[in-house]
Length: 199
Ligand SMILES: Nc1nc2c(ncn2[C@@H]2O[C@H](COP(=O)(O)OP(=O)(O)OP(=O)(O)O)[C@@H](O)[C@H]2O)c(=O)[nH]1
Ligand SMILES: [Mg+2]
Image 1 (tube, rainbow, N blue to C red):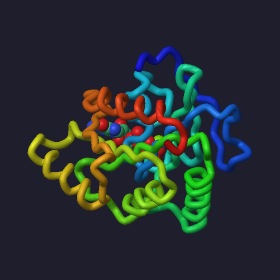
Image 2 (image 1 turned 90 degrees about the horizontal axis):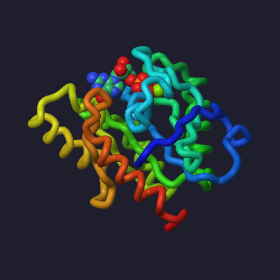
Image 3 (image 1 turned 60 degrees about the vertical axis):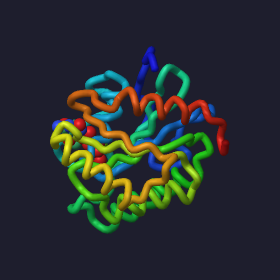
Image 4 (image 1 turned 120 degrees about the horizontal axis):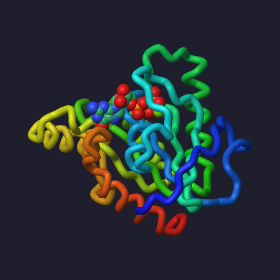
């Protein structure tokens, strides 16, 4: 995919704030600090379009990025940040579930899992939501540069088994540091964006 333009459009917490116009959307979801914003920047070859941080919980609302005036990337707030209070967790759940359950422009979701760890209960719940709402799911196993190739292979097997993943749901080792997995993920996204809603 050639990126001709990529711009931050807006943040929103509720449907009234989502962009209008019906362009297709791809959502990026995963645990806080797993590398969502970094992965978006890597895909778009923009260094600081999506804000990244060493402090987990940086992204707190849905952030919409318009690409090539043709589709949106949606950076979802991360889950599982230990210091998040109950009230915030509740508002997070409502914000994300409202989006995933009701957004007709949504064509697919990239679920990010740190390649060094087993999926958590929240990762499995997120996967279940995505399946349950019938979204195309792609999994990016992030921070691949941080482990060796043998450990990576074992880890991919474990992720696939524990989420669990179906045969038609791609699992792509990814590194925002080296760019590994970028082409594979783009090709999966391409397919997804070409697919008619519900098709
Ligand atoms: N080595 C390495 N570090 C990464 C990679 N991806 C992200 N990081 C680092 O991990 C930290 C978190 O990255 P973010 O992209 O901000 O994570 P996020 O999922 O957007 O986090 P929240 O917005 O808090 O949910 C930052 O310090 C990044 O530099 C990667 O592929 N390799
Ligand atoms: Mg982020």
